Image (cartoon, rainbow over all chains, first blue to last red; front, side, top):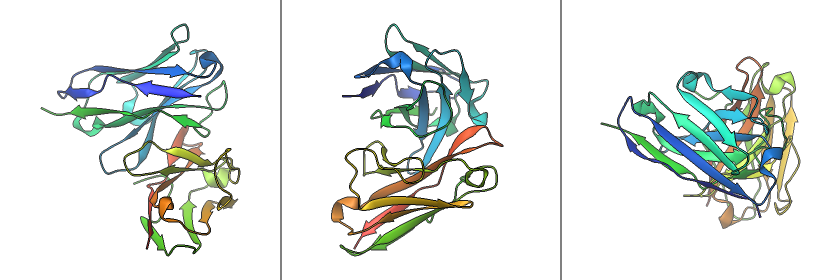
Amino acid sequence: EVQLLESGGGLVQPGGSLRLPCEASGFTFSSYAMSWVRQAPGKGLEWVSGISGSGGNTYYADFVKGRFTISRDNSKNTLYLQMNSLRTEDTAVYYCAKDPTRGYSGTYLDYWGQGTLVTVSS
Amino acid sequence: QSVLTQPPSVSGAPGQRVTISCTGSSSSIGAGHDVHWYQQLPGTAPKLLIYDNSNRPSGVPDRFSGSKSGTSASLAITGLQAEDEADYYCQSYDSRLSAAVFGGGTQLTVL
């Protein structure tokens, strides 16, 4: 059974940093691209970032470029999202999700974690 | 403002059929990119409902179906049930943005 478990969320001040891990199990982690998608309170879904199965290729939404970094440790079956220079508008539930292919292509996400809430506020 | 446009809400009585539209542009759906649909029950994570325009993952009832034409796509739900009450999101890819894009979501109410 595929399982994705995010953690690391919490309250952070504007300008601060946070790192979100997502532990994966139930599939060969290195064989699949992964993504982060966020959802602001009461709002819709918003793609944030994607990474290939090898970790060699990364992709970002314009609104996080230069501030967020996606990475993965295939030896630990863990995906990460390093978030720097956080803004109040980054407040959201952050979901990690599995792609159906090894190379990231912006296609569908077949499994999602339960999400972790990040609140950016002073 | 979402790149893909969905109606904010739709409703129907139990047993009825409802459709949810998803309108894109020449750089997203109109460029030939596939459309996918997700169901998000209250307080839960999104779940893949339809992929590659019209395919259902294992376990998704055949009451749910998808189609795509031109710059738009649709999700149809037949034989509405109370448990279908949820938010539904379409997703595609936008070549101009080089990014996956979502619709703003449609809240389905079963009357």
